Amino acid sequence: MFKKINFDEKEKKKLISLLVVGALCVISLVAINFLQGKQETSKTNQEESVAKQNEEGDSKVSSEKDDLEKQLTAILQEINGSGDVSVMITYDNSEEIEPAYNSSATKETTSETDSSGGERTVETSSENKTLVTSDSSNPIVIKTKEAKIKGVLVVASGAKDAQVKQTLYEAVQTALQISGHQVEVYAK
Image: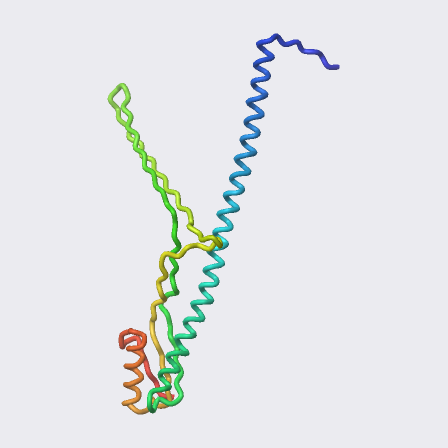
């Protein structure tokens, strides 16, 4: 059933060389897949960390917005004659967080001239960005841009009096450093 094949020394060396090269290729492919899997896991973990921090940041921002409304309500109620005060603040956008990145860019230009005088220029460029994290795997934040206030609505029982209404109006402008067209004061 099986026939014995006889190889001379040259053929044996070629066969062994091919088997060694084939084994090295298989080992290389396995190693590359393993390393890529680790890198993807690392990137996924970093992305999850950024998403988690953004979620925490969103709840923190929401809490800070509520705190600002409560502080403004409390201070406006202290104004003589204001009475019961309610405040609502609207925002144009949310807080923006800019994380730190390590980046490297390369640009390569190759010029070729053929024998008939034709010329070809090839430009290749690449950029690599990596998120910078702290020891606890949280992204490092370069800067945080606060949410921009769009408008403020104040409803106060004392706003029936023009003097109190004007005082509340000016107090909101001063406290939040916003322009007058962004503030409305109404009586309850």
